Image (tube, rainbow, N blue to C red; front, side, top):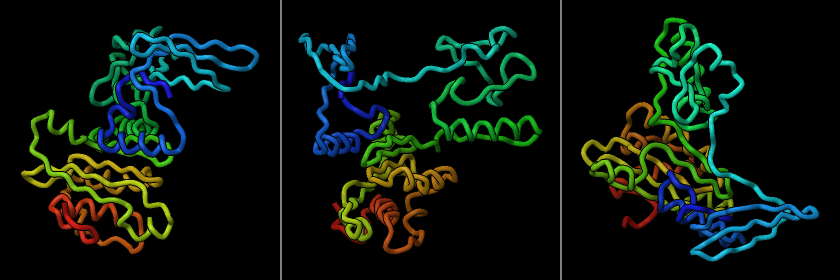
Length: 267
């Protein structure tokens, strides 16, 4: 993997992204960070990528090359520019808080407007937009939209990371719980990973949740629900979870915001 930035999984919790990189390295993936790809040449069905790192030119041969350098709005060809719809500097359609463009009767949602380019974000915006058009109160809470990297193990996160919260000057408490102390994970012979909560130290409100585990994309939904309703780590920690389940690790991490996890020594 050739990565231009100094770390993988930018935007996700640094601690968990480092754990993900360690896991993928153990699976045989080699990471070249701070490496810039300048060209890819195809010859007789084989690809050769040319890159530079620290002033040194490197070449990598491969059967296939997956180019993933970010996303851009697929806004051209919609006809929006023909009727005078306004775009921003990144070719995204400008909308107000109710998804209305500058042209009456034209609304926009999803990947063609600002915000994370995620299918579930677009779906929620679509529902909210139609509710607004119908005269109801549509709303999307952008602080409660999870992001997922579908590797193995998966990395999922919602809300603020620990570093982002501290950059905002927030006083936070952290609760973590490893899956190696979770009964279901042990029974599945799949103990890799951890759950991490970031909570406001003043009122215990959950600011962010981050999970590294093979089922992280499923487990993160519980944290999203609590954040959506402005809940606290105690709210989640006092909720009864079935045993044995992987979701118990989410509960234990929430309890450990106050160092009250049941199945590990608090530290």
